Amino acid sequence: MSKKTDFTRRRALGLMGAAAGVGAVAGFTPTKFAIGQQAKVRIGTLLPYSGTYARLGEAITNAMVMRFAQGKDMLGGREIELIRLDSEAAPPKATENTSKLVNSEKVDFLVGPVHSGVAMAMAKIAREEGVMTVIPNAGADQITGPLCAPNIFRSSFSNWQPGYPMGRVLAEEGKKRVVTCYWNYGAGQQSAQGFKDGYADGLKETGGDGEIVKEIGVPFPDVEFQSVLSEIAALKPDAVYTFFAGGGAVKFVKDWAAAGLKDSGIELTGAGFLTEGVTEAQGEAAEGIRTTLHYADTLDNPVNQVFRRNYREMWGKEADVYAVQGYDAAELIRIGLEAVDGDMGARGEMVAAMENAVIDSPRGPLKLSAAHNPVQNFYLRKVTNGVNAVERIAVEALSAPSQGCSMG
Ligand code: BEZ
Image 1 (cartoon, protein in one colour):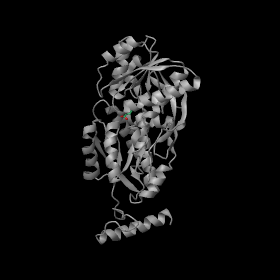
Image 2 (spheres, protein in one colour):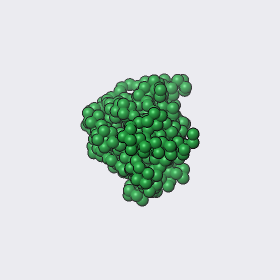
Image 3 (tube, helix red, strand yellow):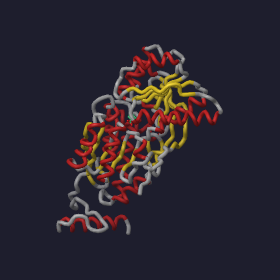
Image 4 (tube, helix red, strand yellow):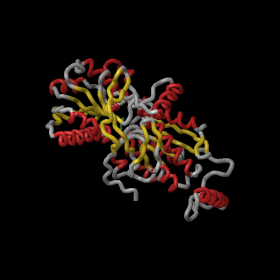
């Protein structure tokens, strides 16, 4: 049966079912709107609009709003409504907040979160309730690993991904003594694991030797870095790999420079979040910092150039990776809804369209793995005149390990 015929039949039967007070009819789900008066598509964002990750949530939301506005706020023939909820990047509040969106607000799509701890709670409800979900940042490896599900997609990365290429780069460059330093929760730990795996692979391939001399965890969202910086200065490693983002990244980079470490011969590196969206706030302290990420301001492709110009015109600020991930989350939803002419009941077709999407992303053409996680290039970038500029591709088309993922 063609998609169109199937949809028309489903719509007609759905209306009959509603008239007769019937719920689900065998083999299809009735649509929940009447012809000519289609209900809005409700998209609930659970993102941080306050706290250390607030600027990440804002960039994701801005770019989604921009993408939807480009389609006149219509998807698959239905108007869109955004329902925003502040996650506060607080895992203890995540279950209640997610359930508010799913059960009280009755959203059709969940979009969020930024924080991996929030993602773990959100994904549990998304799996139980079967709500269509797009994660526009949080990298919790489990969600595209053992906790993967047909209704959960990610437009960002898994935490392991941005760390792995930085490990390879430092090993290939012969850095022998390395310290890892990160916010000590799932994202920081998994990011450091990615780095260590890349470092080990890089050493193996080059036949070099090297060691991780110390791993330093800082409680999230603490920004008291003095004792950590003293410890690093005393250890005198060749390089430090870090995971900090948002307000914490601003503070870490400024404190690093203020402690005199910028000219100490110890190289400060990290997952790209260290300098992403925050170089203006970091100022001179950020200059020269190298990181790896799936995006860079200077990526030379027409989609990126247009995206950055539109974002600047609409929001009066520069786009960053969080904006890219929000834009692509909106695009994934667009692809899903348009494939089924706005019929949320046509779940199988919607999921298939999203799984097979090739998104023309500002980061380059974007495809998803079987676990619904982006397969993407990772760039070595260097802050140059306040911009995260591409140095080279560090690892091409990197897929995250997704052991334990079964979509069954
Ligand atoms: C996370 O918690 O997964 C995360 C937060 C900020 C930046 C990157 C990852």
